[in-house]
Length: 203
Image 1 (cartoon, rainbow, N blue to C red):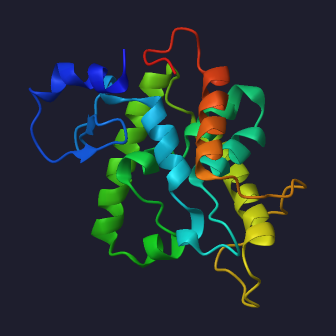
Image 2 (cartoon, rainbow, N blue to C red):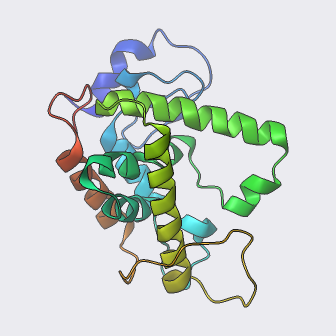
């Protein structure tokens, strides 16, 4: 059954603002449900969203490729959390650069965080994994920072000015941006290898 077919059961009984995804199905960001999740839509969305607002030296570097890198930096039992750590961005339509997030008014930051947290909770259920512990979240954040340091080294033009945040040493991997569709496919392939067999929403 297609993603679009899966969404048809509840769509007629839902109200409120919704976003149309690549498959044609709808996503309600303020009231998401597990049955609304389509991993292909998320993979394609992450593949098409550029890190750093697209301000890399050459080709855009996708959030999908970033998530795969973060997952690869983690031990096997935490990789699914790393792969999903930015998956909500595919369902919010944007990866806000960190300086923009920090510059937003507190109520806007709280609103965006609330949507991201609610979406994450639904995606963890769809993936068949428990809510991550504080220790797991710290490990994912550390891997995220290593990935960011690697991206700064390999993808951004040196600006000669220190960033606000202090970063750990970069990974030894040399990053080369993939076309969006390859990054999306790699993300989905990694997801399939990590999802439990009894995940409520298979990939």
